[in-house]
Length: 151
Image (cartoon, rainbow, N blue to C red; front, side):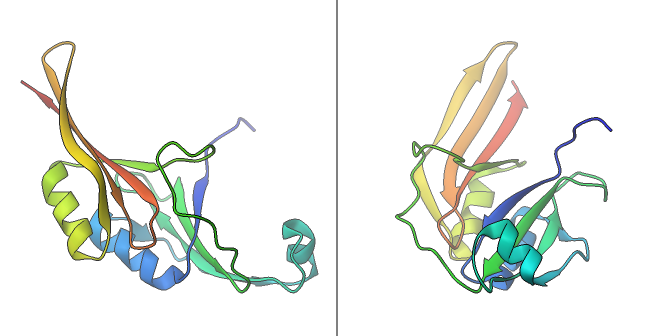
């Protein structure tokens, strides 16, 4: 079988609440792949004794039922880290192309998320205008919103 991208995982304090945020604001859809995982195999896989993971998979907007998904999990044992910043090493952010960057940003803020930096517009070749902003979901994960328009 050829390689294919399957999912991105977010570890949440409250997977149900974070899942609802992504469904409401960014139009992700549950695909009935709820998880309630525990057992020796999972302890070995994670290296965490007596671990218990719960969560679900959300279909990303504008994709078929066959993936990729956003996997949102909560662990019975949480590991807290410092706040996320755009220039931290490792995974940085999720990006969503939206029709209205400013409108989607307002929805994110109304639902308890936040804004990181300013909304900017940039000119690209072939008379393309891009609009960008970095936002944060309700648990501080960074989301890039982008829009592309022919001018």
